[in-house]
Amino acid sequence: MKIDLTEIYKGLDEWRAERGITAESQKAGYLVNVMEEFGELSAALRLLEKSKSVNDSHELKCAEHFIIDAICDISVFTINAAEVDIPYSIKPFIIETKREFSVVDIFVAIADFIRADENGSPFNYYDFALILKYCASVCEQYGFNFEIAMLETIKEISSRTGAYDENAKKWVKDTSEAARAKWYQADYEKARR
Image (cartoon, rainbow, N blue to C red; front, side):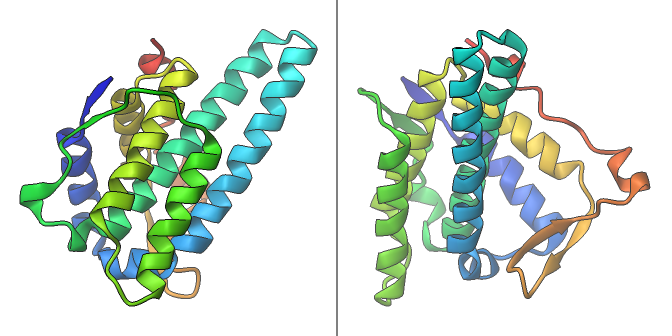
């Protein structure tokens, strides 16, 4: 599987520029933010197992969408946190996966990514590429095109208003009724293979 990340980078570049978000601000909250997404991923995996055991196709579809949403959010946080440290000329515009990877592989790659930063090294290109490769692989294993799913996620986050919360170290969406009326809901069925 080959995935072209060019449009994903462009979409996230625009999203960050519109909101004045920097890679440094995203790094500060990276661990907390991805752990929150792992919590959502864990809940989605439990829902998936439950829906399979009771043969509920609607719940199964919802669980798959929640899984893809969490995987894409992890990818968004990763790209946004590493952006400044990865020169444009060496960004992995094409990533290839030749075998299946698991959620555990993503977790380990994220730990390596963070460990490098805690040791004073910039987020490194190798771990950055592994996280995206593993996320893409997991997406594909559930029957979804990673590139299309990411573009849907970017469309969703771009439709939201809000502000950067310095304490939370992340962009916090405006959840007022007026703001919610304008939200786009990612349509992950467009990404289903």
